[in-house]
Length: 161
View (cartoon, helix red, strand yellow):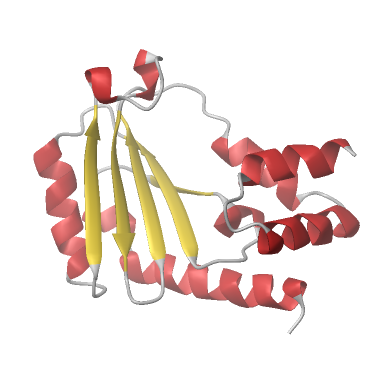
């Protein structure tokens, strides 16, 4: 199977999982698909979703995770409260709750942003999705080759060439 065919097959699987999770009913915020599932350039079973959730609490997020466990069998859940000094960057607007879920086949990243600001995630994925066929193939090649990849860096490098 070619990388393009593999990416398409993974895209179909990702959409099926996304529908099965029905995140909009598990959590009181609107889910936004981001990353390779949105761009269509998947090389791994990794589903990325974010929420603008300024009123999120630990209890609400954990309750939603319990609901998800009733929809798919979760093998592991890593939940992080990344507020205050635990936030991933110095920017206060990057405070979030972050959960990484694993099923037997999939890694699911859920980010609950506590501050509603413009984020580049959707625009970046759409920009990559609209790349030329040659650029898309080169991105897939680089992602497939580098297990420790920074997808954003690969996208930028290929699109600027």
